[in-house]
Image 1 (cartoon, helix red, strand yellow):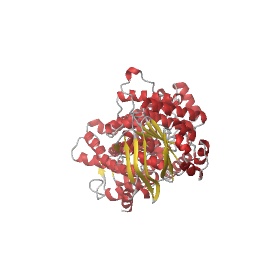
Image 2 (cartoon, helix red, strand yellow; image 1 turned 45 degrees about the vertical axis):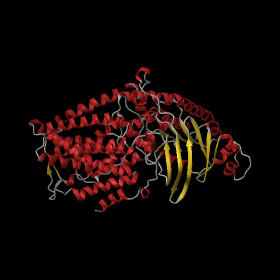
Image 3 (tube, one colour; image 1 turned 90 degrees about the vertical axis):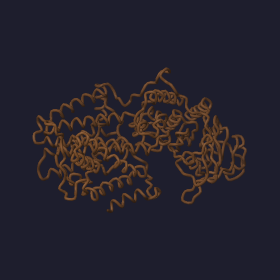
Image 4 (cartoon, helix red, strand yellow; image 1 turned 90 degrees about the horizontal axis):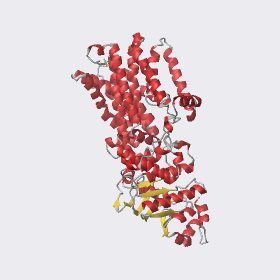
Length: 632
C-alpha cells in the first residue's frame, strides 16, 4: 500500500514539486558500430552455437530455454533504456503480466500462438499506464515511480485470481501441443525462433524513424520538441512496444519452465535487469544476448552453497568498474576496434546518406513569410515578474533584435513564445493565428523554430542526423504509424533538405562527426542548420553566436542574411554581440527588468538616452562595443 500511495502521489502532485533540475544524462557509448561483415560473422557463430545447444546441454536445456526467453526481456528493456534514455525499475512486472495472461488465455481454449500474442497485448495498456510518469517525471523521480509500480503490482495484484491466484500455488504454463514442439528440444527451438524474430524487430526499429526519434529523445527531449515532435507520444509508443515484448518474453520463459508462481517474479529483479542492460556492451541484439545468457545459463553450471554469493560479488564489482570507467574507454579497446575496421571494412557509424539527385526530390521548399507577434505577454515565476506586458512583432523577411542586460527577461520571453513557459497573461500569434494554447511541438509544427541559450544538440548522433532531425521531427506527426515509418518520398526530401542546410552553414565537412566531439561554435552552427532544414517560417535565435570566434561570427551573420533574403524568414534575435545585432537587425526591441523600454531602428537605438541609461545607468554616449561589454 505505501508504494501504491507513492506512485499515485508522483502522478498527482504538481510538477513544480517534482522538478528534477539535473541535466539528463543518457547512456553514453563509444559511438563505434561494428562493420556489417563482422556482425554477420558474429551472428553466424552465435546462431550456430544456439542451434547446437540441444546436442550438449543435457539437463541444462531448460536453463538455456529460460535464458533465450530472458534475452527477449532484455531486448525490450534495452529499447526503453539504451535507445530512448528512459528508466524502468518495474520491468519484471511486464514479464509477470505476460506469463499470467498467457496461462489464463490458454485455459480459455485459445490456440497457443494466439494466446502468446494476446498476452503481449494485455501488457500494452499497462505499459501505457507506466508511460504516464515518464511524461511528467525524469531521473530519480521516474525511477521511484516505476519501482513503486512494480512493488505495488506484486503486493496488490500478484495474489488476485487473474494473476497467480490467492493460494500462491502458481500456474501451469503450456507449451505448443503439436507433438515434437512440446518436448524440451522442440520448445527450445521455438524459443530461439521467437528470440530471433524479436531481435530482428528491435534492430529494424532502431534503424527506423522511431529509432532516430528515440535516440534524439535520449539526448535532448527539449531539442526534439523544438523541431515539432510530440515527445510524449514517442514515450508512450516505446513504453507500449517494450511492455508487449517483455510480456512475450515472460510467457516464453514460463512455458519453458512449465510452472510459475509469484516468487518467480520478485520486483527487485528489475534492478538487476536495469544494471545489466546498462553495463553490458554492444548494440542490439548483442547486449541482450550476453545479458540474458549470463544471468541464467552461466550460473546454472555452477553448483554449491557459495556460488550465488560469488556471482553477486562479481556483479557488484562489474557495476562499480563500469561506473568508474570513463565513457570513451568503455567497450572494446581502441586498437581492437581499429583492427576490426581494418579487416572487415570500416566503421559503419561514420557513414552518412548521399545527397539525392534533383530528379528524386519532390517538395523541398520550407515555409516562408511567417510573422510572430506577442500581445501583453507577462511571465511570473513564484510571484516574481520576469516579463511584464511585452508586445512585439517579428516581421517576415526581417531580422528583429531583442537586446537587454543580463537578467532582463529575454530568454523568458523566448520560452513564452515557443511554448516552453505558459505566460500568466497575454497572447502569442503566429502568422495571425493565436497559438497561445498550443504546446511547443504544435507551435513548431506551425512554423516556429528556435535555438537555445545553451546549445541543445543530440550528442550521440552525427551532425548529419542532428540536422536531419529538423526536417524529420515535424514529419513524425501525431500518429503511431508516422512515428515509426518514414515514407521513401520523405526520406529523399529529408536528405536534400539536410545537405542544403549543411551547405548553407558551411559544415558539410562535419557531417559524419558525432555531436559530442564538436566545439561550442560548431554546435551553434549545427543548431542553426537544424532550423534551416526544418519547415520553419519564423526562427527564435537565442544567443546563437555565443562561443563563436570573429570569423565564425562573420560567417554566421552571412548565413542569417542569406536565409532571410532567400526564404523571407522572420527572425527574432537575442544576442549580446552588439556589432552583430546592429549589422543584422532591421528593428530592435530593448528589454530591461522584464519591461520593453524602447523600440526602433539600429540608428535610433544607438541614439536613445533610454537605452544608454539601461546599459550604463547614465546618459553618456555609448558605442556598440561598450554595450557588448556591459551585457556580458
